Image (spheres, rainbow, N blue to C red):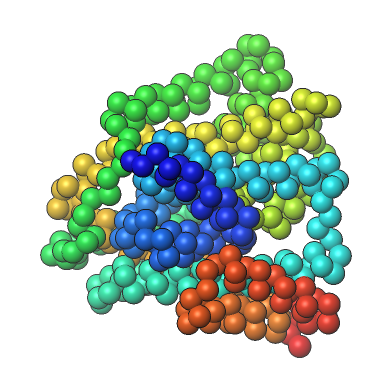
Amino acid sequence: MASSRPVEVFRTFLKLGVTSFGGPVAHLGYFRDELVRRRKWLTEQHYGQLVALCQFLPGPASSQVGFALGLLRGGYWGGLAAWMAFTLPSALLLVFFAIGAVNLHGVVGQGLMIGLKAVAVAVVAHAVWGMAKALTPDVRRVLIGLVAVGLALFLPGNLGQIAAIIFGLAAGVVWCRNILGSSATPLTVVVSKRVGVICAALFAALMIGLPIIAAVMQNSWVSLTDAFYRAGALVFGGGHVVLPLLQGEPAVAEALTQDQFLAGYGAAQAVPGPLFTFAAYLGFEMGTGPTAWISAAVALIAIFLPGMLLLLAVLPFWGQLQQNSLARAGVTGANAAVVGILAAALVHPVITSGITGIAPLIIAVGCFVLLVYAKLPAWAVVIIGAVGGVIASGVGLGIGWI
């Protein structure tokens, strides 16, 4: 592993961290555009395997995928570099919002939201289009993808996504045993089985031990860590699910008003990067004076930690599992199901929340054309879409079907 690779990973993910707007599904599109299509760090098949695995685990799926990509490219330091670079921009923006230094209102703020949501539509559509060509090239896998679309759309919450992955695994075992090619190549990682077992044990120890320690010690720092760790450990299906979990935590509910909570959650929709960085805002608001920055850091690390521990616990055994022919067939079906899940997310909530008028539709179509035919990088398309949204807002075309 080249010693410069963690630096390369940090620079790459820092760019993604300041341009990846639109939520978890859009992040997967940005990752694919930059790391699979442009930089060719891994194949479409291996990327589909990572997405399927992280969709199945609790935690922030897009951040887990980003961490795994950094791990594959630059080892443990690469994984840490990917997480830090992708997470810190939005975390800092939300802390500045808590301080009052960032204003997300007005014509410019509204225009940015219009443009950036439209860009997310284009990025996700581009990802679905590209992954469908690679991961659903025949009738059997197209059918798996279509069933996954239906499950993801019509079953409530994250149940649809989990059901789609399970269906894809089962259908792959039945229908895809004779499909060979690059999808049969196992995804190999640098994590040893010993590290995997240690991470699994640490995850369980913190999950069981933190509530006990918090109850015995009655210490605010332990209670803070416990609240955010438990929320991160119990989230399936993306960052939005963390909202009710955090609202129900006594340590959070007692420290913040409902207005403070919702204001921060609204701001989290407007910044790039993972939605879990909402924890930095909450931690800052729960702190006092100079300790506010420390509590923001503790909350941020605590909410991401369980998902990363679980990923590290599973990855060492993932490659070995894929050596089995039935497991390879199952993974092939799961990859097809991932395309269906992303297609379903493109319909709702990406299009339903992003295309709210003529202007967003024009911006989304234009950005899609720039990605597919002009082959512009996603960060350039983000800037173009944001400027288009501000212009549309300024002339009154942003909202409503005109």
